Length: 90
Image 1 (tube, rainbow, N blue to C red):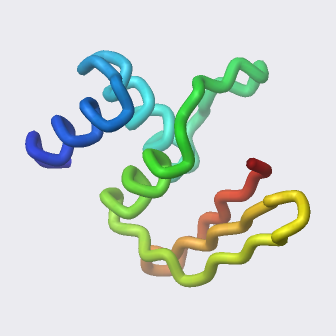
Image 2: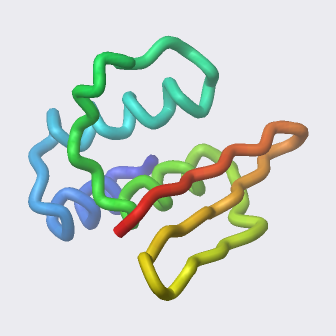
């Protein structure tokens, strides 16, 4: 991620360098199938920031779905032969 993008994200999400780096690292570890914190202590990461980090890692959003009633969402990303689904509830 280039410095201009990092600065824009830090300002938009009101994060310092360490906070942004920790969130980027946490998501990149998941994308690389590495170990990540499974204790339930998930750092707060806005969905928009997660989307930016996933796309910056080279994944392309190939499908997005939402149910309007409970605002559940499913975003499917693809990079080469790897598919990653980000889902949640707003």
